[in-house]
Image (cartoon, rainbow, N blue to C red; front, side, top):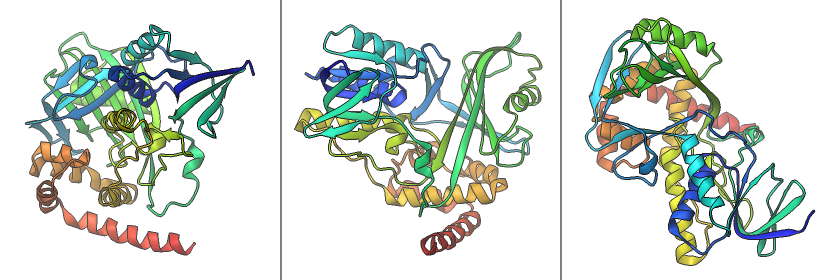
Length: 387
């Protein structure tokens, strides 16, 4: 090692959660020195980040597109446009978030961006140590955004695990093909096995859009997207400007937010992805704000994320339904957005629903599929406990 390099805070991973935490720390103008370890080397990679919000967020300055209407369509061809009242659906781009945060860190001599792969974060008394290449960094507190798939290998009492595969293309058309005032939130008209995949469309203009296929089973996504564009939007030969793809786990498993007394896990590794939707950005922003508040008020960022056991159970039942009876999913989503205020649905999906929101949602959803899934989940949990 080339000697110890001390900082107040070290963040391992310059993905979405690492960048959002660094950005929140910079915005707080605290006295902390920050080391950000970036091993991805994906500068300027095309990647859209989306969320919904009822009010201002910490990323408002980076948001490039906003919509107040959503489209939900079932596999039979019925499409419903729902108007949002208090929410806005919005999208920004990872590359812009990355450029802003890295530039701000590099502009301040207290901070440092380090390219390289980090080893494990180790607590040593009142310091955290991590090797990055030939260097050893030390810090008062460490934050680790690295998610390891092997964590999912152990038996999970919460049951179902689905892998969410997404593949998107940014397309440009020679004629008007999209409604730029409405984001296609869920569209099951992708001519794939019912409920196993859906498309969503973020129209940037009448001729430009990000078109994404999300599936819980391996598919030829590029072919499916071209077929979907031709059938639903009348676009036969679009110009593909950029592509993005990825894989993330949908699981109600509990992830430990702490890896020792001075290491806080963040992002997916810290359980910040919503199990039933695959959305994480709003929860990452909330988590970053809580960490900063902990540092400001107590000098200690080791705050636990909120534990909402009721929502964890609902996620587990939802995933059981999706895993065992996927053909039911289009009707479930159609009922959600067709019978209930979309703002109530989004609050529920964001775990911000009031008791009245929950009552209104449950009263209008088809109960039989969920009761069947609950029974299957309870039976499966009993078997998992015995094994």
